[in-house]
Image (cartoon, rainbow, N blue to C red):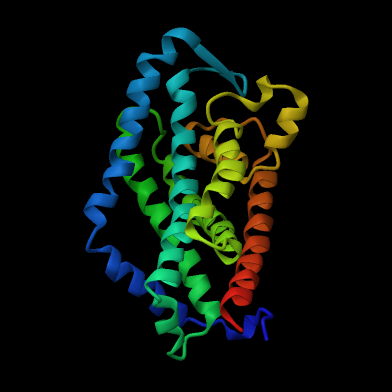
Length: 263
């Protein structure tokens, strides 16, 4: 039987989540260097480079410096990268090379609980990375306080969606080298064309419509709303899209992993 059984889900997934936390605590100092230093590098590079060329950006009726426009998007993209990489490369290593999933499934924990734990853990890492980034961006004036604190629960929620789509690809990718395909064909275009580096309203109509299909676009808009109080879209539609996206790919992730691991 390879069907998804929601009845197999329980709070036991927290034991798997805790196992990942205990393992992560041994290497957290190295991992947190990325969210700590990355916004500084981007702001330094774009602040010294593009700001002189671009000057300012018109967004939601306001005139922003280029760095002000870009900084909230860095928070959103950090959520995407952290969650997606956790449930692709890291989960694949635990599943295929370390056989961690096999060991856990020898206990009363179900496969559904293992998959959900992986997704929730990815969201937890994303939220933690955003906390570190806010500690850097808020004192620099690129995130308003206290409204910017909404970025943390937003990061966890969106992290569930990106973690779920990563788990979906883990269930169908035959080898770890093949993860280059979803990164090149899905993650990279989303990173570039989701209003991260330029307003979607400033590109062609057809390209703007494609951007609306990307979950990162909706997260970027919500992050800018929390950080700057500005948005070019309807926050309820952005939130609704992320809810549907998360539920859909959580189910698809459960289904593909069940097909892969259950004979």
